[in-house]
Length: 466
Image (cartoon, rainbow, N blue to C red):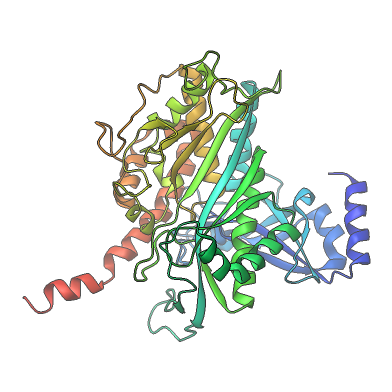
């Protein structure tokens, strides 16, 4: 970061009459949190950081703190005891002006403790470290995104009080914008063009590298794809994209959700497909291009893919971190249900695209849900692929019938994914025992709340018969 760069931003703030700056960081769920400061204070915050409570890193998806912060003697709680402060340090490379709030600047922040030590639970830092370790092996990480999500008309925000302990309030009441089930038809696109234009213009104003805007199969289901970028750029882009879509849609009377499978009639699951390849740092060439005709990937590409396949089950917690997301894995559904790879096969978990002489040769992992923390999703892919490179793993034969293959099944629930992660030597080595235990504690807290809740299914199943 240079003073010249900061000076350029300060000049822009003055010229565009920007009044406030939103300081943001991605929490353990990939949800943006932060504070808003007067624009005049940006320079001092860049120099000294801005305080933020550490307890935000210790919460589950209901915003309940999952750790004993009032017990300073508890192992690992020294830096978090009493909800002590940490510091947000702006990364000026991420500075934007928000098109839906043009008096507002926005910047992503990194997290440090007050004595300058990096916060080990910062998922942005974890992803950056994975990228740097891959660079030491001689490769740059390149990825592109396909992101599916839903947008509905907001009928009632359901801003009603919740009785009892703090918990999420009732979900908003919504209605469909289109019937769906006419995949990629121009008619459906035209029906949804006002919403799509809203999203497209927002993305373009934010300089997000979007490539296409599509109508997906399900009712009110959308897809946006992104051009490939190196490193963690797309993790930064994804957290900004999700936030931007939700905020700009809400301002115009819509509700956007990146929840995998909304509980609405006929709604289909949404996925987040991650296109990946490696760039040889010495030549700048795509390291996945096969060396001979008839080969599906280069030896580097095969080893990287083999690592992702080998660790797919235990890293599913990183690609699919919600209870809801596991309801997507179903046979004959264009979503994977087992650990296989295939050549241009959308039923396989890993789909290989390209081939000999094709500079765009890559693998597409179709395992992820759009609610995943982007930094952890990318970091898990990189770490697994690196393990494949280091051990020169083989992915085995490709599958022509991915839903009938004799291959390990993907986890069918978040509970199963947690068991796999807890027993994973690979995750402990790749991310450290402290971080793995930290993440498991938060996810187990969510599961405990889920299992304690009385569901509609239980009422239907047992109330009358017993």
